Image (cartoon, rainbow, N blue to C red; front, top):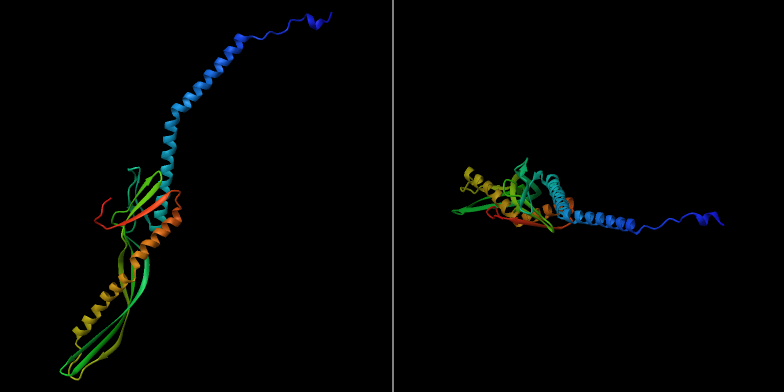
Length: 228
């Protein structure tokens, strides 16, 4: 007789198998329950971390473009307060040239003054006004004051004509008055040139370029008296 046939064969134990199946199922259910129960907290933590990443990205972009840390809110909660090392941010500079002429006739005698002025107009933002950013799940909203004319520097003045009449002479007050007209003409011409709208568009383009947002970026320019 074959010796192997005399040895008892191992018997399959259904109770042990059932116990293992129940234990594995219970452990699996516990893991799933723990994951489901902790899911809101983990999601909230991941969402907060993402918001903070975007807020820091916005801050860094503003520091690079405008040397300014704006007031940043994340879902209406203040994340960073506004700080700035400068009071004004110049975005564009433009050369403005104007001319003005005085012709005055008295008793048949005419005096004439003609002046040419060259100015540098500087446009940008007053950072003492409200600068704020609101970060939300699908949008970043930036609040800025409208661009303004920050400075107008006269670099050159030319006298193109200085002609006295026979008895109608040019007085010092005449020359002073005509010189005072040049800055006003330059200021008006600077506004008419569209330098303010161009400054706003330039700043927004610079912000977009450095920020490269993964969500919609809306820049709202508002008057100093306008509140969010």
